Length: 314
Image (cartoon, rainbow, N blue to C red; front, side, top):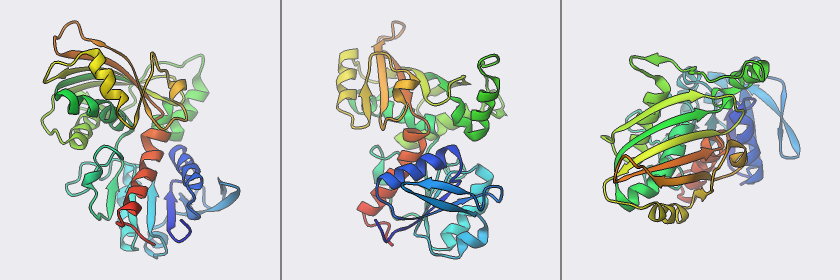
């Protein structure tokens, strides 16, 4: 794709680095790397060459010269900078929560709800946990409907970005522990609220009863979820396995671990069994590479969908 002019904002961060690797693998040739003033002037690897990192300023992004921009930065930075990239003529795929629940902005999981893409200037990439959960729930939704969902997440340190990775490296193994490093909002953490709200939007089930407890665990990469699902119609574990086996972005495994998911382009689902407390209940164990599949890959797949539908061009 030599003619498409691509920018990656947050190119030196955990997700930005993976995004650059995926773009290089897929043959995007005209790519520029952007980051904060702290990283400007440094270089990042892009395939067999180096890219000099430019400072991500409103002026640089509004100047034009970019057709597509991936944002892998925090919420406030996205809110400040994304409008300037759009003003410069770019389509933006944003990985923060700045626009995920904004009316009129599609929240897209590639291969699940592609139909919501419609020539938008901004496309939101979901929270990695919401994406993982939605991909696991969609086959069950199609097979038997969803009546209720409960889950506990075991989210890796890299889900908190470079700061989370450095914190784990600084404390493990002596102090590695469970934590809840989310912002508290009332009776639930912001991560739990986002997981529910985004999953409802992705699945187009605004009233789906969904309750989550989110915990950070001392794992470098790979989010895990213990999920209990009540379906509207009866569904046996074998029927659920068949539904998952037919889903393009799911891989069945006996007992998947975060290390099993690392580097994979699929969500791993295992321990599919009946919930003995509910005649229409199933229990699942779901694992995902939160940096690759949960963030960077989905954003690149969104761009490929836009190109295939001619909603994006150089």
